Amino acid sequence: MRVVWIASYPKSGNTWVRFLLYHYFWGEPANSLEINRRIPDLHRPSGRIETASDRLFVKTHLIRSEALPFLAQTERAIVVTRHPKDVLLSGLNYARLENEAVDASAYARAFIAGGGDPAWSQMGFGTWAGHAASWLGGAPFPVHHATYEALKADPHAGLRAMLGFVGEAIDEAALARAVDLSGFERLREMERREKSRGAESLFRGGRASLSRGAMFMNKGATGQSLAHIDPALDAEFDSAFATPMARFGHGA
Image (cartoon, rainbow, N blue to C red; front, top):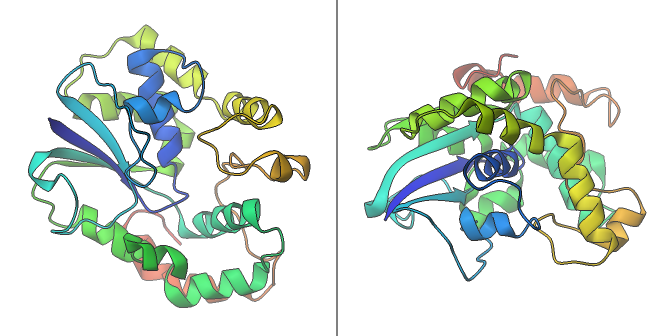
């Protein structure tokens, strides 16, 4: 088995990349859980795994280390990074899927002080900068770096680059269809449909969060500000993250 990691810090676009790849190789799934059967989530085992070849895409949020599972089987990795301010806001929304009482200011300041969500660090995901450095700095296998911002600006080019990286001859019709099927509003509609009928879903949260308008597929936004939480937060954030943001291609 040849493992191709889809590695990212949480809330950076990993789920979207999995949908893009699934739609390209296997077409439209019957439900969102089919994604886990073809492109398993290391942190959410699905039991049955189906693969049409000896290559297996696997999702992970773990930092790259000698403790990484399947290290001997690893062939290469697609690493997705996202501007950490957008990660923070997406992480806040994710936390509120299960607990709407999460305080936005406290969450943001803990994220800034910890270099990322402290709970994620405890789970082995590291800080935002540490996670990126572990995968993009000297890995012993080929790594393709995709930023969420570039992928959102041109998903056709982003998916084409990922497919070329894993050695696929590009089927342009299949690529166009994969991008269309993986559109943000299409995925939101799948989430709404599954949660409204109480079905088990790839998307975290359930009917209760859906009823108050909280969704896993929240905004997919870029270039956001923290000023709506507290006017002082943007300056605090930029001071803490300026150096690693520049290092990993996310500007100021």
